[in-house]
Figure 1 (tube, one colour):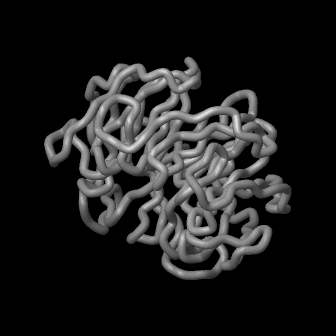
Figure 2: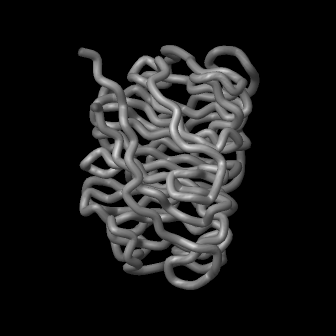
Length: 290
């Protein structure tokens, strides 16, 4: 008997505002091996830390360009040691903090050359000690060591199969393949770890497997790929080859509904955390086969 996917709402937290546990335009979310959830509270120029149950733990960051300060933080990633990598988008750099928000290091500056950015947006880590960053307005991906050492880049602007139009979310599969959300072309483009093109899937529209404005991507331990569709107000789930499995969520402010989903993360149990931009909240879901 074939099995089907079932999505169960677990919990949510957040509200609009500037206090602890409140958000203004949150964009990035990541889950640490400890289970702690980090949210890039973008318009408040800070990072907030929560338990897996949504209890507020800590906050750090203030508007500025000095080390440890933030300006429009976007994508987040957490390494095996619990260090938090932040795409500090409007400062055109990546910053790294420990689990308690202490600044460790950073790299990048505004520009077009290697190690330069024009609004870095998404960030993902692989198992080999590399960070991949989508360089939004330079229409490229850059690969670094976790110490910020530049490794390589791949780029382009346009609709040809391996070129980008403002790449947003990024995720690395267990195989090491790199999946990039090509926002303006409304698709996912897949590369190997050296930036060699492998395949493309998706497309523009409201049909299953197509997107209206994809923003975020996450890949679970079973190889299933989840994509947040910002203007579609839903999440779609695909198999490892981009074949459509399930669409879940709809526009709204109720439980399991979305108002511009913009961030995705997974914990070690496989639960999916969806960051809802205009809902100013995090929602947690369980995705199982029944």
